[in-house]
Length: 138
Length: 304
Image (tube, rainbow over all chains, first blue to last red; front, side, top):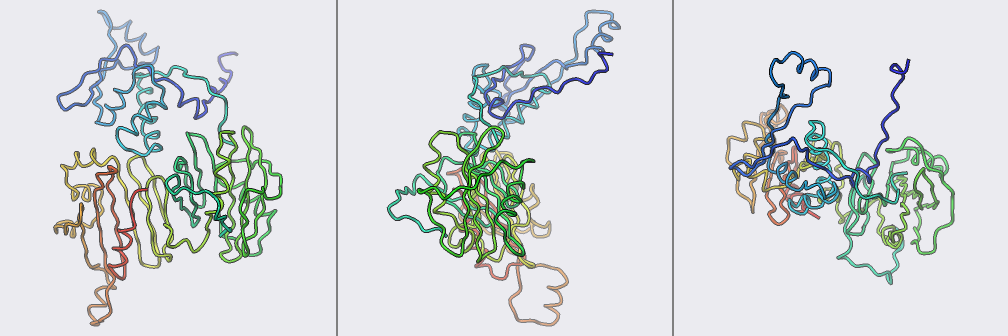
């Protein structure tokens, strides 16, 4: 009966903890700069395990997962270049804000949405960053 | 509204205006707008909340207990924090009549602080202000912030001063719609048949590059003008462009038919680029009685 048991909800990160995470690029990504100065990403498509298993069985030769290509715009390329596996989301937001003269709150919204989208495609992952001293909203 | 202490140190360089939902304050420069809603504002300092503001016009008789509970429950939190009424801290300024004030301490699930409820008998507005205690020195700013509190007669202070924009509109206008997206702000003010819309885009260099460095492309791509007006070239204004046109609705035609000599309300749009702040600003006025009023709004609209 264990498989029908409702999964416990994943623990939700506070905003402060989320900003302290460190975005890390996936090793499977190939990034290149176009002549226009924007970043082009080649990334393998993340398949559900059972679809990947089926594809593996039915493909006669060595199976390679399908890949996709994503061209970032100017601001996306700037954010991509700021991801170095050491800087936290907060650091990236600060640098993005100062480099583009965008309001810090807008920079936070834009960068976090961008990282969430890259995370959904399996292009970046989040490593836990510096621990904080609690806090948050009432 | 409160009596300010003239001996209080107040550096204009370290402060900036904040105005939203009819409430005007002077806040430390490091405080940033975090969330806005109708009658609601949350300010933060270094990604942590410092001030929450809830305001509403009270119809009927005002009751401190009832409206304190109502306002504390409203807003973005489902549960209201525990409140404990206290006497006014000595450093806080006095609010003279016709304002009534009740101070309190509050405690939420993770954090607490101090606060006050102000009710003005003149404008019938009740405002709940809650300060968050983080133990990082933000408490020093509270008396100065409270001393600058205004809930009516905010002129000549700006009508709007949030995020990085500020504008002064004639008092008859009220905010009807707003949208704050990353890169694009839009606020619509209205009064009777007059409408004023404010826009702000950022970063301007990226937007202008996409639009071939042409502001009229920004106007066209964002649908700021009716197609019939857009075919005309805008008049160049300093670092921007302006269009003025007459409405072609039935009221305007009737006015022409009866040969009315009174001044016809007009429409206008001005868009300009601020390279110093890397912003593009635009104001559109519809049904405005005089273009002088439009000009004054445009002049007042800028970056904090």
